[in-house]
Length: 379
Ligand code: EPS
Image (cartoon, rainbow, N blue to C red; front, side):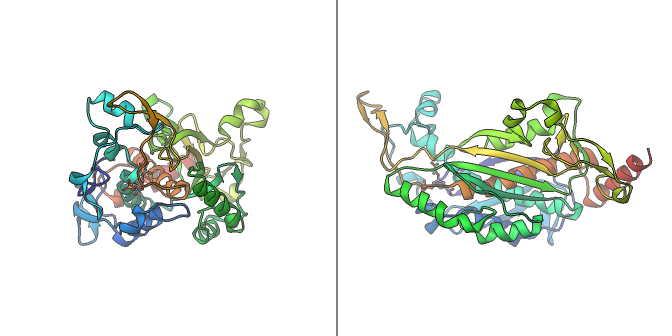
């Protein structure tokens, strides 16, 4: 089974991920992982920490001569702002953060909680996801994440292919598919900064080139939609996840929700096996399995909970009312979160690929995918 764990604090020596079950024979390009880390540091609305950090990954094990070995892969993202031993505690828990619940749960300081709860940890989740994409690339599976709403501002995608969308997204400071709306979005972030407030938004990830049959209908904890929802919901500040039509499906009749099935013999040689779907309201997943249509998943990110104009709180020593503590923070990290979500989604798809086609080597995965599609075509 392909999986990973992370460790490390926001102001500790660094963040690590241990990726287990990664197949052998995958070309690993460290610069591609670093490019994702740089993207995560960017996007309009980020705070002072990103001016200090120069995020990059060090591969500590599992890769030799540029290829995965089939053994566990250890990734390190060092922290330049390593100062945990000199940092003060916080007395006034920030509403929305883990400060109050975590310090009660562990009978600890607030610092002991916030250092791990911080979204800094997402740097190494991005690294693990970017590694997993290098397994997906030879299979022709590609993920793209972008911002579709920033606070009240809806940002409609310009039409285009995945490659055109990638270029649009990379030209936008908001990481949206419509750079023409950047000025409006930037003005909104600036207004929030001036008011000492923060801004959330909605992120969409599309995965293309997905074969039939990733995930399963047979056991709840292996359904792909469930696994994706867990991976995305577990990203800091995410409060909602939708696949395909999501919540909109509940308000429509069945005839307006389900994607008709057609057969197009001209496409039978491709990953759809010729089964065409004129719509994709299912977001590429039916009964916990991929149906060869693009996977479409959306995440709602709440505004960051550290406010420059802090909310009402309580001093933990005196139990008296006081404003919440303030620590350096971002005004809007929605663009950065789109990088995180894109990469955690990619990791789950890679995990499902390994479950379906085997985990020992890329060569075997490629051969088994070809065999599977031939058998499914001929049945
Ligand atoms: C983050 C680094 C953190 C925060 C941010 C995410 O660095 P610092 O605490 O030193 O400023 O800027 O985390 C939060 C906003 C939060 O509330 O946890 C990063 O690298 O993404």
